[in-house]
Amino acid sequence: MQRFSVSVDDDLAGWIESKADERGVSKAKTIRDAVETAQFTGLVNTGEYDTEQESLVERVEDLEARLDAVEHGSDSSSNATDDTEDSTQDVVAAFRGQLEGRPPTTEHGEAAVVGVFELLLENGPMKTKELRETIYPDFEAEFASANSMWQSTQRHFENLEGIKKVGYGEWDVDPKQVESGE
Image 1 (cartoon, rainbow, N blue to C red):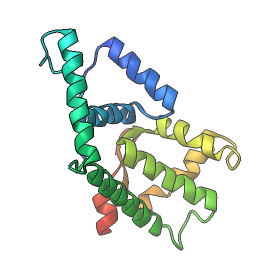
Image 2 (image 1 turned 60 degrees about the vertical axis):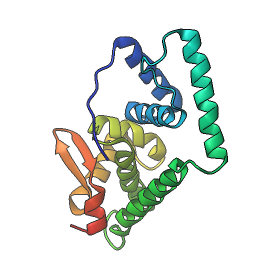
Image 3 (image 1 turned 90 degrees about the vertical axis):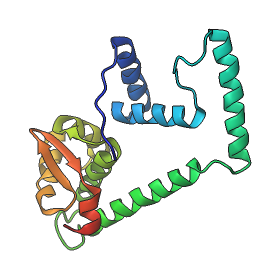
Image 4 (image 1 turned 30 degrees about the vertical axis):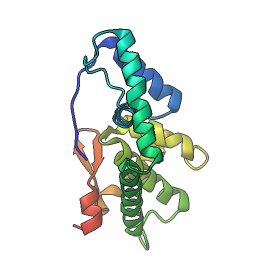
């Protein structure tokens, strides 16, 4: 997965934050979904069209042509998405396999460790606070607080391939480490 750093104006940042909040996902996930949608539909503000009316008409025509291509099976992007989903599931399964016969030994402890891995795999690097706040609602019944959940979870990371601290209070995953076991 490639990483990019972008700057956006306040209006766009507000839109990204509101969409992320509405969907209950990270801002990174919201941006990725928007870019994938633009890639699929071809609806990107490129400045290519001279007038707003011309832009809308040509964009609709372009979208109709793309839909026709998808309906007639000439679009390969759906296969790429399926392959990516399969690959992600394989990496998660390999990561989960590392937990067999080792701590955490509780079902909810294992689920929390795997949940952090999946979240990082989906969203890229995240700060401890963001991870803790995102994961904890799924485990409120098992842990007294978000902090106790995080302390019980993160102590297992150093013994697992593919999940690592990449900066002060920041975590990430390396799927290649999980697949190779290095």
